[in-house]
Image 1: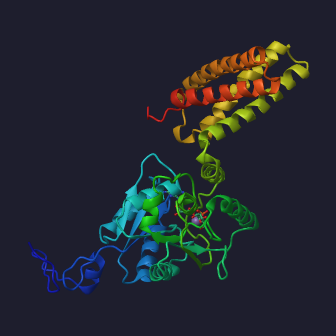
Image 2 (image 1 turned 90 degrees about the horizontal axis):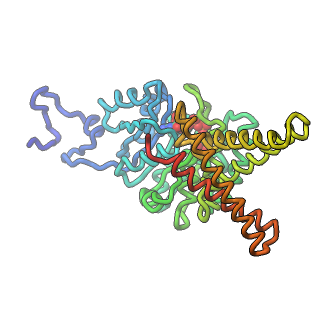
Image 3 (image 1 turned 90 degrees about the vertical axis):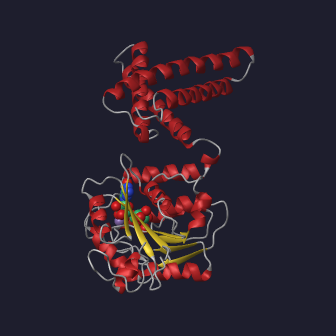
Length: 397
Ligand code: GDD
Ligand code: MN
C-alpha cells in the first residue's frame, strides 16, 4: 500500500502532489486524511448555470475549512445533475444526489443531510441570492459560541429583502407572522432558506419532520423537541441573475399545509383536515348547482339534486387529487377509475351518515343538530379512511 506523504509521486503518471491538491482531497502534510467539518446542502431545480459559479464562490469564501457541497437535484430537465457530476469528477468536495420522480425543496434538503456525515450542516440556495460571504462567519460563530443554529436573516438590522417587489415583501412578512405561531423559537426570520446548524439538531428532529414544501428551517425549528440556542446574521437577499424562481401557488399551499401539520396536526391527521375542508367546499358547490338548476326553474328537484350530487362529488375528487393527495395523484386512465371508486365509497359514506344520524335522532332523542353533525363526522371519517386506502393508496402502481 502506498501511504500518502508529502513527497508522494503517483506510480504511473509520476505526478507529485501539490499543496493545493492536498487541500482539495483533504490530506494534510503528514498524510492524515482530515474529515469534512461542514457540509453545505444545496437543493436545485433547473440551476445548471448557477452550479459552477456557486462552487467557485464557496471555495473562495470557505477557504481552509474542510467542506463539501451536496447538491440535491430533483432530476432537473436542464441537466443540473450532470453539471454537478462534471465538477465532482475533478473536485471531490462537490457531490450530487439526484432524486427521481420527486419534487420539493424541504424533502431535498433532508435527503442531503442524510447523505453526508459532516458534524455541521448548512443550507443555501443555488441561485446566488444568499450571500456566501457570511457562511464562514456564521459557521465560526456557531462553533465558538456553542450555538445550535445560526440563521442568515433578512429581518435583523443590516439585513434586507433586496429587490423583491412590494407584494412578495408583504406576503413574506405575513407568512413570517404565521410561522411564528408554530415555530416556538426566538428567531425573526424562520422562513429563511439560509442557515448553519449542528448535525445533532437534525438527528433529534428527523423523525418528526414534515418534509413538505419550501420551508426546511421552519420545519426543523417547529419540530425540535427542545428550545434551541439560535443567533441571526444579517444579509441582503440578492437578485437572481440566472434561471427562475420556483416559488408559486403550490409553495404557498404547501406552506399552509406545514403550518397545519405543526399545529393541529399533532392531534388530527393533516390530510384529514384538508380532506374535510375540500368536503366543505363541495357542499358549497352542491348548493350552488342545486339553486341554479332548481331555484332557477330549469329542472325538477330530483334532477337538480342528482346533478348537484354528481358535480360536487367530481369536484371533490378532482380537488383532493390535486391537493390532499397531490403526491399520489392519479392521472390518465387511473383518473377515471379513481373517480368511480371515490363516488362508490362516498355513496356508502352517505348511507352510513344518514343511518347513524337517523338512529341517534329516532332512538336516542338526540337533537337534530347533534344527530346531523354526528352523521357528518361518521360519513367524513368513512370517506377519508376508505379513499385513503383504495383511491389514493401510497403503493406505487
Ligand atoms: N431539489 C429541489 N426540488 N430544489 C428546489 C425545488 C424542488 O422542488 N424548488 C426549488 N428548489 C431550489 C432552487 O433551485 C433554488 O436553489 C432553491 O431551491 C430556492 O428556490 P427559489 O425558487 O430560488 O426560491 P426563492 O428565491 O423564491 O425563495 C428562497 O429564498 C427565501 C429566502 O431565504 C427559498 O430558499 C425560500 O425558502 C426562502 O424563504
Ligand atoms: Mn431564489
